[in-house]
Amino acid sequence: MEPVTLRTARLVLELPAEADIDAITAACQDPAVQRFTTVPKPYARKDAEDFVRLIPEWWAAGSAATWVIRSGEMLAGAVGLAQIDDGAADIGYWMAPGARGQGIVSEAVRAVVEWGFEGPLHLHRIGWRAVAGNEASARTARSAGFRYEGTMREAFRHGEHRDDGWIAGLLASDDRTPVEWPVLAG
Image (cartoon, rainbow, N blue to C red):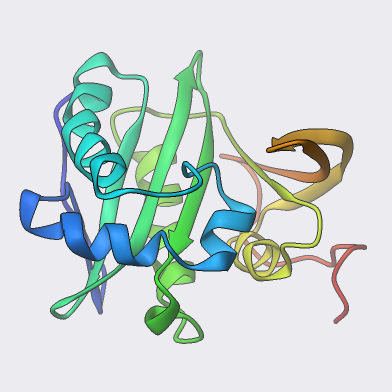
């Protein structure tokens, strides 16, 4: 699969460049990124170098479509579809601390969801998973129309312990209007 650049009103989603390695390294030092994502812990510059190098390989293999999120000159985070197979994929994302609270990740997720369903993948389903308690990620998924599907007990390994996980899904045929999630207030 050939990489594509996605554009929204405020954002550019594109492949990372070598010039992004230091920004990625810095963002992945954030305790929330390390707590709620699968980035290596501790996160070293070599991990960012590998991330930048592997993304084009994932695109070429058709196994993942990953972008960095740019808001103006700022590298705001990353978003992607992974485990692409048989009309389904999982979405994941992280945000740099300075980019949070501005609706950037929600805008990026909506663009990726639209591309996943309407673009060359023609996905039927996009899944979302997060460590239970990651309300920021859950609010983002809910705002894109994902439907809460349940809690997976001890689904995610973090070092020596395991965390419960929340799961949600969105079908191509679903209305994108946000619905209530029992794990989120309001």
